[in-house]
Amino acid sequence: FPGAMYFRLPQLAHVLGSRRIQRDHLRRLVVAEHEAERAVYQALTHDRSVPLEQRLQVQRLFETSMPRDAAANRVKNRCVLTGRSRSVHRFARVSRIMLRQLAHAGLLPGVAK
Image (cartoon, rainbow, N blue to C red; front, top):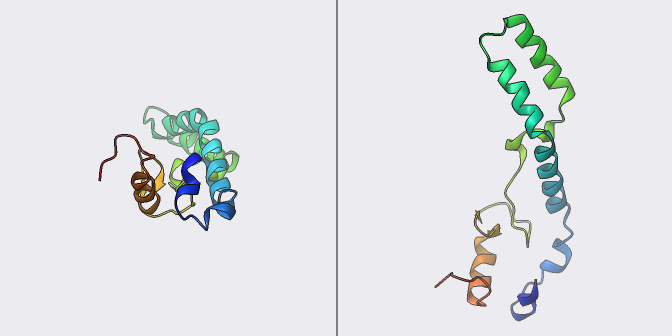
């Protein structure tokens, strides 16, 4: 991003290609890819009008055919700049530390001190 040279980010150079960020990105892609299929499987397993044996059979098929990373709860919100996983603001997807630095540098429109 263009304003990175105006404040100290010594860790940013090696973290932009961080494995954590890449893993998070791949998990998000897998979740998006399997979202419709998961919804169908879950609707079938929770539908009480379907007999219990068929629901259990669908559930077993679901567990074996879906990758584990297709579950939305396996996606962790991470800072897109540093890869930090704690205290990440959703509206900008940056950590509190980066949010403060970007706001002080004037790179976040609409954010006041």
